[in-house]
Image (cartoon, rainbow, N blue to C red; front, side):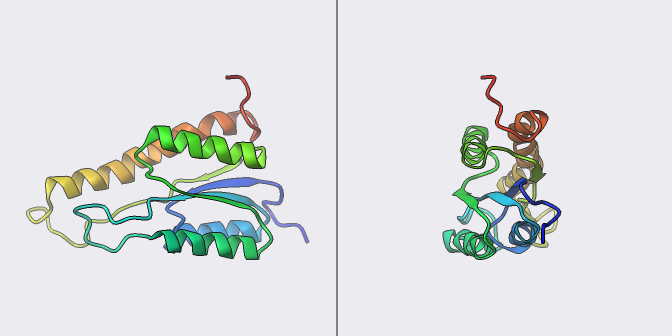
Amino acid sequence: MSGKLEGKVAFITGAGRGQGRSHAVRMAEEGADIIAVDVCKQLDGVKIAMSTPDDLAETANQVEALGRRIHAVEADVRDEDVMTEVVREGVEKFGRLDVVVANAGLASEGATLDEMTQKAWRDMIDVNLTGVWTTTKVATPHIVAGGEEDRSS
């Protein structure tokens, strides 16, 4: 039985656990191969427990258990150069990119405005906004190319 995403490739940020893992597994169930990233480390000033390398490895295991391929990389969505390379490697490996899920995000963990540090605020804005911009920016050339690898450069 063919899934809705059979033959497609999805790029998912924050894929180490939670919603990101759920997206990766569900899309794999529907037939997609996955390019997955997560920072996999605790960021200074972030009070909530963040993903680990073991979390991302578990996502990869679950996707592979479904018979799908995954390119899982520890990467920070705020780093455009790294994100460009991850997507390039994934598209080279799988031949295309069709779906983008900019899922990575941070929360303030209930800190009130007067309790939140400027660093915590900047990290949250950088991941939640700049990270989405970076994710879509590095993916767009491949999506515009009709899913296939952009070989114009």
